[in-house]
Amino acid sequence: MSPTEIRLFQSMSENVGQFNLSGKKVLIPEMNRYGCRLLAATFRSFGINAIVMDTFKGLSLGLEHTSGKECFPCQVTLGDILYHMKSEQEKRGKGFNINDYIYFLVEAGGPCRFGMYNKYQRIVLDSYPEYRGLKISSLTTDDGYSFNGLVDSKKTVDLRKSGFFALVIGDILDRLLWRIRPYEREKGMTDKYMDKALITLETTFERYGEKKNFSAITETLVGIVKEARRIIDPLIPPKPLIGIVGEIYLRTHIRSNQDLIRTLERHGAEVVNASIVEWVNFISYNDFKGAGSMLRLDLKQLRFSNLMDSIKKAIKFRAELFYQEMRQKQVYDRVKQIIDIAPDHRVTHLESLLSEEELFSFEVGTEACLSISGIMEYAHQGFNGIVNVYPFTCMPSTITSAVISPVMGRMGIPYIDTPYDSSLQPGRESAIRTFMYQAEQHMKRKGRKGSMD
Image 1 (cartoon, rainbow, N blue to C red):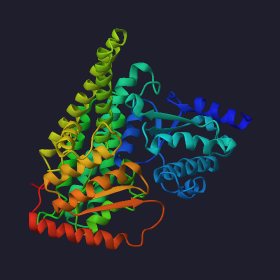
Image 2 (image 1 turned 180 degrees about the vertical axis):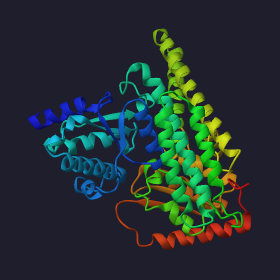
Image 3 (image 1 turned 180 degrees about the horizontal axis):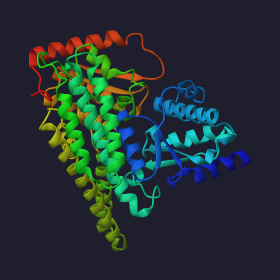
Image 4 (image 1 turned 120 degrees about the horizontal axis):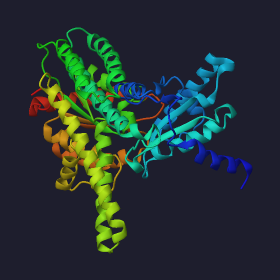
């Protein structure tokens, strides 16, 4: 093994993992604007100096260090961290110290290329001698996105609960935005108001996040929702309801999907995108199912020494999912008393739906489970069209398209795939216009249900 290869393996073990974030400037890539900003604010409430990096400004750097075979989000996030570090170097000059920073990056197990981001980005960062000391602190689906090792062990559970709550509130802000913007009294009112609301909630999480004062945060949110409702012009008639599914980064990262939701709105849609928390619940549910399978195997093979550990894991993951869904329902119920935003999907219901339709199985894993079942749920709820958003060549989303396209055809529901890479697609506008015409015709024939009933 060459010295370069030895150094690479050492870097993978020493500079990628779950590192303590205390005393570091924690750099978070932007995926979902609201959720990421509120998560960073939650970190700050625990004394962690976290910021969300500017995004898409370094895309050329990301493309420069990739071949095009990588998943598009890998190119975007790689460009974000390289751009940020170069900017920090220029700003701080001789005062720049790479050991002051930690790059916070989530990963996933399984066949998706997402699980290899931190490994590949580690190689690229190590190609810059000045960035070799930048540690990548990574959360992974392999342990249910545990926060172990990131903060003092006494604060781990509290940080995880507050971080989850930040994602729930971020999802609700998104749904509030999508609910009111198509019906705003004056163009631009919604965006201006939601920008102010985000700043208010960041301050609220910084103040109450560590205390887990979720009641105070919820009351702040309720005030924001009440005020936001006044933006709606009641004279604007209901618009075709469009549901979005797909790869989690592309469907939530505005710049990567070329502001797809706003484009659909411009052509007459009201849009509901799948949530971030849906994925978190899916991970907890899969962990619970995995622990249950191991428990049954232990019993079958009479491995009594492992039995208690399997029981503890099954109880732990089931309790986590119960807590997540309970906390989520509490906030959604409060908000829905004020405005009819779309409810979130329950992952257990999505699995039962897949079983009934016999289209796919949660045993296969990947985001295809959520996308296929999410599409069927949108269809049953009376949505007027479905959009599948994903990186070009994304395996789970390609599976989704192959499974669901003929089903949507038989059901007579407009459906469109929108794969993205770094290029501009010349036929995109005409494809979306055609899709929205079909959605309008569907609404005339079938009516619409969902968030405006």
